[in-house]
Length: 589
View 1 (tube, rainbow, N blue to C red):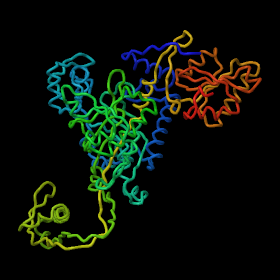
View 2: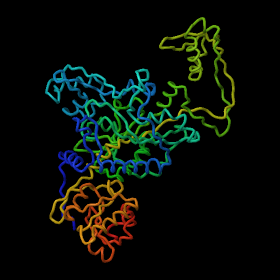
View 3: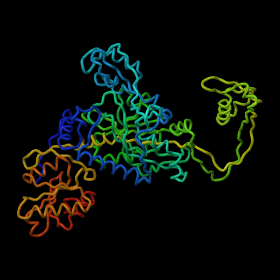
View 4: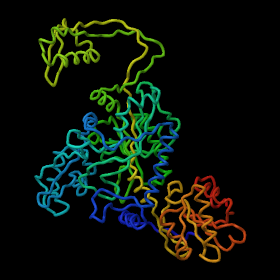
């Protein structure tokens, strides 16, 4: 067989085509359909679960194994204080607007983006979103009722639950896997032998009570994240930029987005750092690392970019953030966020918990430094401040570490529960003394690449879908990289008679024992069997024919080119493995 020509899939039909294929061939489909279904939840079928697992394995290989990081698996449910400390209770919100006629709730920023030229309404404050709804006279997308003067409010996205019977221990389904890593830092630093830098990865489920789930796997309520938290000393630790210095990036910085004639910047990682387009060397390192990984798993680099967050978009924990975005059906969709989280998370958990979220940094040589201390006279503070005396004492301890100069006047002021408390400096016994220290406790900073596995699965499926004409017949196929394809090989008997079926089953067993994912098919003519495997992205097919019975060779057929070669059965496992890893090519056979 040979490929005759190619026909493109119209962009506006792309997502519908992929959704239909995914349901029919078992990649993904809405969950709980027998009971009417629930928006935002999807089941991965046999093909989709295998594709998802292979992408996760490729992620672990690149970002855990090759980088020398560790991996953990933390619980999905965590107690309320974790999210109070992390800021999610107060700051993990989306904008919601409820139609006064039909009662349907919508994300207000999506209503604006879908009906106006505004592209990033999520980054705008609520009053500006309300003004845009009035300016463009926007209606409810469901019933058409006007949304002018309907209030836009904040809606927290976390799923709340109770831990144990009753309501005494509130908890939440984690909205990101990251907090499961941060709260275990006191233990994890020991496994890293208290040496920075070190990375901790996790692949697991996250939960967000989305206002309006939509677009298949793009916006769902349950999804898989692959996250890496890389703990660094910001003063001394530098990434190995030379590994990715020449990787070319397509960048869309914030200032280009805000300019009238803004455009993409194409430059290497080295150039992006030298020209300060990407401010953090660590973020730049992971942009370069991830770019090659996306191509490895099947993302079309002609439909890919890195976009910097605008100031209004930044999460409460992020000092800077870039999104990897893929073009799907004419829209740009975030598939990964690369954030410099500074010391926000560890500092917050250190404040809210009884654990130490710092790490002792040993000096090369002991240092003699001036240290300011206080020893508050509780016989004075007790009568003066009563039950708040202990809190005043703690506030004085914190202040002397942050600002020793505050104790140079006759009085010093601290804040307790939002109220100012003035103390005579003479009563706090402020002193300065020289001490010799062998090191100091530091709070590491965090660099976080956070990958949305479901969105990457959807992107890979969408970008892999293609059509061509083979031997005068139109063919639809998924050009998935062999590494992530759900099946490694299809095995067919030319016909199920004369012992061909029995020999094909023996070949199937041998390949399975060699660790290859095999699909056996003896239904219909050989051309139809090829087409079925092409449509689910199987990279190679093996046909057992009458020559096999004579010389113990089989036909190996490659999906994209449809080229074929004869291979000895005893060499088949090694040959297929070499083809999958790219160490040989069908033309070499």
